Image 1 (tube, rainbow, N blue to C red):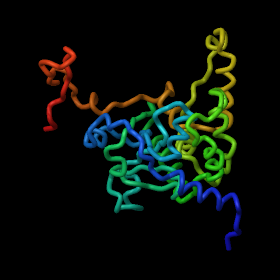
Image 2: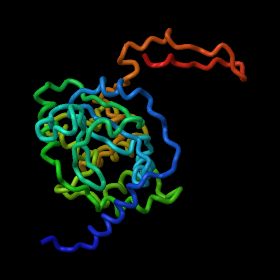
Image 3: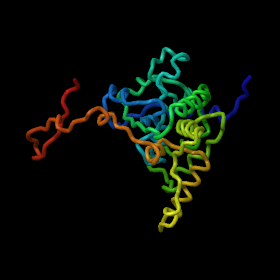
Image 4: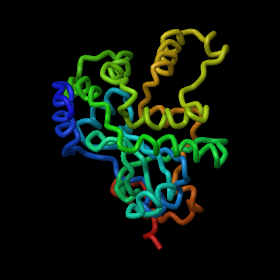
Length: 269
């Protein structure tokens, strides 16, 4: 029998409220879905720009377009979840916890592919296995209690405190947050995400505050989707230019009201 816990009850209520989409202007997808699906490799991190209240808080706190991260595992879970097909992601969802979903769930959404460099196939399998063992775990709802205060249009939070505030409710090892789940999977094979500060950087003027922040984030195991985007160890993969992009095939309008020329891509083949 599960004991009632007021914080868990509040967290579930907040999760349902915060996960509802908002009527806000979103960035359009920067590549066709077929190009995205053809570009992904096992072990890639897919960053997502969400539109929920929860996503808005994450994007504000991290000053980034990315509010969610998922690990692409391809067909690694096909025997376990054949109904999902051969292109599958593992993610930590605020309502359902750690789950496996089909890539098609993110069709038409603004995304970014981040790819770890230099890992062997066996190491990528270990990363996927580490994340797969977390399937079924719940989202760390204590994190939601802290995020709710940032739903105001302009929360009075100094910039250098924003990321620290994300740590106030997190920390239960039996629960998951999307980015922390993936970060721990890569750390399990000793692959870095946040930069290591070298001696030359320490000597630069004005870096003392940044240095302390980076060290604190790394020690607390607190990660956000933005960390994969800015990590010096992950390559940004852009589907459009990965598939024989030719700028000479772009059709430019011959005239425009402003006198400038506007580009237009040819229709998909």
